[in-house]
Length: 563
Image 1 (cartoon, rainbow, N blue to C red):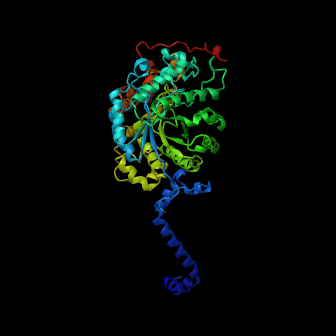
Image 2 (cartoon, rainbow, N blue to C red):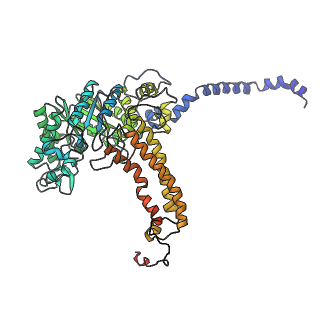
Image 3 (cartoon, one colour):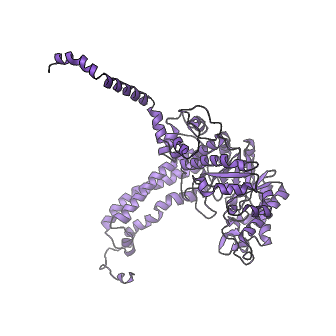
């Protein structure tokens, strides 16, 4: 058909298809509107589960509405009345200068207090002096840190362990006889009068540096070894626990007029009537701690029901680091934020059960899982995680309306990307906070470089010792391999070695003004040197002076040892 004939039939064709064309036009308008708002839709689609309103509505939970759709803050969302940041200082002290730079940032992000766990960094004296680490703070440094906290309006709550987690004392020979179990240096025997005198000395020395504090956290969590020794085994474990805690708490209240706080885990299973009869309700306030995302999974409503029958107040404790792996270098921001947001919901639901509600939320940041564990995330690597969770706790919600506050406080340039979407694909925040300038930011940036260097080293050693056939454990044990192939492997090794040595140098530079040199050395050994130190000697073994130039007949004499 010619073009002219087509043009003649066009009006009729258009008329017959008028409804289909109209429908197509409407679809085009809808598609155009979709494209104009696609960036918002993409952000919603990529958000992690903790920011998905549909998921939470299906579970019967109303979350704050995001500013892409709503501008107002829901009236039922409530921030925590107190937002206390926990600093775990054991065995790896940030410098006093670094902490004085960090405290104003904590205040600007909404912090109202500090929970200071000095542990072996406290300058103990007299009979307690051996418990202080050689790199402990001086009394002048303690006073400097406390003075800066006062200037920033941050209420300081000291934390001392008085039952479990007393390794810093019980590991030492002068205090070893006070252990509940001779082979375990964690738990104190509560039945010895000398044990209580030790606790008194610990409390006295710490409180002397914290005069006037209204609270003292006395620990008392994870007392795994109890009721074992000859003096204790005739008593019920719960009775032992409650008697010791009430005795310590009464001393704190009568001597210092301070209210003791305790971790709650050892009381979760104790019936309310037993707690009431012990007299503990008039002496302490429990701090319920759960660091996983699903708070109710570990402490259900029944625990709050029981506690509410006994205690007028209760505290909550989330985590911004030190909860998802004993050897992590950077905390997963999204998981910690999820934990904090769920805690806010738990506080909203369970708070009315208590006559005076929740006192506040403590954001814990563990440095080690216990006194003898290796380092987990260092404080500067966790500042973005702390900032995100603290802002959420301070406002009662977390969405993109808080992005400017967060970035401005952390010294970030104008946001080049939407934070929520970035965290959905980069849960450690390596990209979202890569251009920020906060105290310790150089070390935070370095951890991303270290991850790449470690991956390179791990890939090399897996190839050299497992995939290749000349430097396996079998070859090394028998000193039986091909020198030419070993030389090939060593050429690759020297590149990896240079990368790791550069990482060590970068780590030292980034941590120079943040922690002391002992902490730098420990961290470097754990996270960098360990990646190649031992394996270097193994890889070089076939090329050492004295390595064989003649090889014996292949040996078969080990076959008889097989099971």
